[in-house]
Image (tube, rainbow, N blue to C red):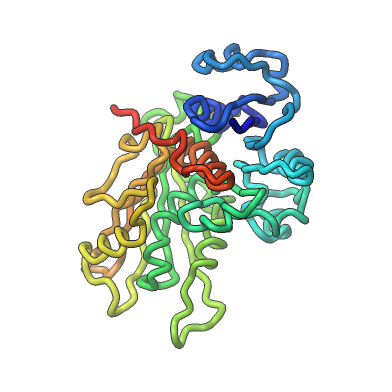
Length: 347
C-alpha cells in the first residue's frame, strides 16, 4: 500500500483528494498538512471526511508519494525538497506547468522558486502526455480551464483540420476560486448572475497556448513557427462545481465537412480512453459532477465552416484532484482508473 501525503489538505482541491483517495485500492492517505489548521483533526475541519483518523500537521510526515495543493509560489518551494529526496510528486498548483521561468514570472508576478526543476516536470494531461507522465517523478497537474479546452481541441489540432485562430469560451462554478473569501463569490454577488473576467489575459492562457503549440502539426507551405492565436474568455457561473467550454475554430478546406465526420475523428482519437467520452449531443456539467469524466461534443457549423466543440468537466475532480490521482496511478504503474471509477452524482 502506497503511503500518500497531501500538502494543504484544507483547500478545496486538497479536501477532494482526501475524499477520492479513501476508496483507492492501492493508496492510503497517511499524512496531511495545512498550516492554518495544524493540530486539528481532519474531521474537525471537514466533517464529511470523518472516516479518516488523521491530524493535520504543519508539514508532511514520511510518505511514498505526495500531492501539493498549495498556492502557486509556495508550492514550488515545498515540492523541491521532496523531489530532490526522490519522493514522486503531483503538483496541483501552476508552478510547474509553464516551461519558461520568465513566462511564469510574467504571468504570476513572482520569480520561480525552483526553476531548475522545470525541465524535469511532465505536463500531467495524461490522455495527451501519457508516456512522459509515466516516466516522470514530478508532474504538473493541468489547470482546470486548460484541461477542458485542450481535451476539446486536441483531436482537431493534432488531426490538422483547423486553422490557428481559436476561440475558447469557458464557464466555471465558484469553487474554482478556492476557499479564500472574495466579494465576487459571496452568494448575494454571484447568485442569479453571470460575469466574464480575465479579458486582459487570464493566467491559464499561456498554458493553453503552450500545450496547443506543442501539438500543432506542421503543414506543407506553412511557416515553421506558426503558433495558435487563442482568444480565451472565462466566466463565473452561480453553481458550485463544473466547467463548460465552448471552443470555435475555422476548418481547413478539404478536411472535415460535417458533424458526423467530426464525431468519427473524435471517437477514433479518444478510443480506449477511460475518462473522455465523445457524446452525441451537447453535454451538461451536471452529467460529470463528482466524477473524473470529461464529456466532449464536436460538431460543424456549415454556414461559417467552423468546428464547434463543447466539453464539460468537474473542475475539482477531472480539473484538479481526480486528474492528480490519475497521474499518480500512471506514475506508479497502477491502472489509471484505480479509485476513480465512481459515476457522476445526479441530479
